[in-house]
Length: 137
Image (cartoon, rainbow, N blue to C red):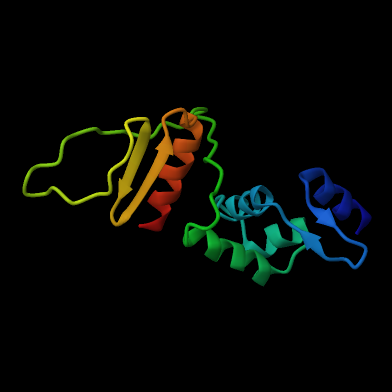
């Protein structure tokens, strides 16, 4: 148990004297991402993190609902993640009424979801958001 606590503390998990833990969203997302690896199981990953499998399953549900953003997938073939970005003017027949925005904003529209980001948002963060939106479909 001591080794598990040391591992969790190194990840930034707060462990209280009562035994309760406060999990940062980044650690939850990392654990969920590990369950999506080929051959990985929820039970196996839960054991590595010292949580019950149903607790990890709850984090997976949060990720599916878009309430927990997973880190971008890392692969040996593609060290950098790119997301396609298409800019076009909507056709008059397809034009939808969208709230006005300032010129210094980046807008991502995915179905009924619209996300406005600052223009200086890092490309890696934009890719993470696009990846998360893609898992919703």
